[in-house]
Length: 399
Length: 224
Image 1: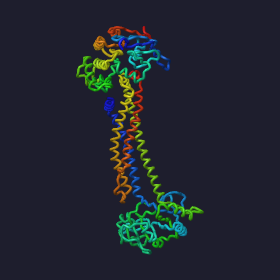
Image 2: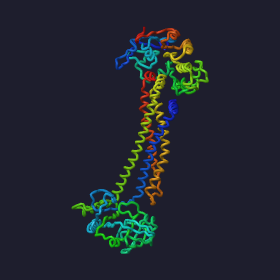
Image 3: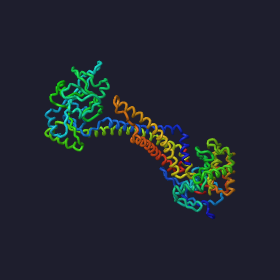
Image 4: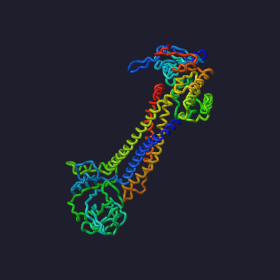
């Protein structure tokens, strides 16, 4: 009875009802699809970051402490002298210490194409420990050869046996590296890897390294090794910054968590706007029906029955809006995420086998819908309460 | 409840507190309404006749004094209990008809009993009273806006009678109707009274008051 009242009243003012439904739909879509998008970015980043939980990275100490490898704020021209590398090696024993040389030079890829490229110098026996090969062979000591990162190879059609010109020196490509992704230590996917000997003869190094990697076999021992290194090198003054890949992962997780919260916040704001709209619509509905409410009450409708009638209206609006919004946000969340994946992983293989709809994404849709219905009820309650508390005599006297 | 009067007012006072000072709408009013009576309440506007009718209809409670409806004291009742009394014991006819615009004529008539009775029984009863009000079956599904004033008031009377009330209260029932239609409405009410329905009617029209068997005059909240 009161339910059919609610339906009839919504139909009587169908434009008004439709507008408030649209408001809820937008709110639900915003909250759900932005949630899905944040989640997709999270998943994707987790996918891209190579989770090497057993790596310690040592860089020269910079004014900005406690950051992650590759933070642009730490891009200063500083290096760790060979003497300190030896100290690190002693502190880290029995774990393997890998000094890394990094620089950039203009590289000709053949066919007239060239550009500045990151060049990484490693001891030939360290290379197989850090990097996997896609095809070709590893470098032997003192061999003038190069390993090319997979994306670089794909972009310029480079394969084992090709020749590159670094600076003015011609060099033969021995192998192509397997895709590695974004890691705490080095990122060779767009780089060229050469032996330390070749690197030194080409660039000159002053016996210093911008980066030292310690491979700790056992995750449990990471903290002990870090402490040993800090103890030995940083006792008198801060010479180096030491961090491990877990720190970096934590920091990335934090950043993306914040992005997700931010996106959800935007969605929440639009839902609040929708709630205010419902409040407004319901309030108008109550105001213009005061007389009718008075009549119903004088004929024997109880307060809670009047309350229920108006709540039904809010619930119907919220339910329709949330269901439409849920369906639409499933669609738009999917499309937005696909687009985001496309942009983030252009030219790589990380986007493959990536599913947008995992449990969390569905959770966001359900959350968005529940939030939509919830705000509708909350917004509808106040006007409904006012309606139910009106004294019938006063209500009927109003025009 | 036989032997009890339908209504008993004992020294009833109603004061409306207003910012400009309290307004005494009813001043120590005592009266009795016996079963089967047809009473007209007359008085100038602002004399308190509407307040009196609202008290009779359990729409308002007195500031002081006691009101008994069929032996039940109502002045200390909760809002829910008063609402149930209105629903089950009282019928209202208003000057403005006050039909619910969302509902068809027959749904308006059903409204008071559909709250307590099954849908089919309500429909049957509604048709019965609407026919008794000489309403054409074709009008049953019309919305109030599609009916003439006389038809609307007959629907309203049908609605007031559908719960077979102990007391039928009418507030200027012909105030919005032309003389001819008003006369027809009064004939219907008089006929109901002849069949035993107790009616209290507020009016300022002496000709309409002539249909009643007793007239109460009220001036400045006091019975004159």
